[in-house]
Image (cartoon, rainbow, N blue to C red):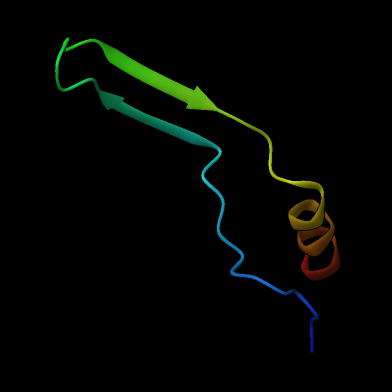
Length: 43
């Protein structure tokens, strides 16, 4: 069994249209270190 103290969910990219301005917004981030370690264990 894997010991991972939280849900293994991560959004590397999230985009949406700002409701007030109509401007498209895009956010990107790398997975947290513990998430990357988990992926390495199960890959």
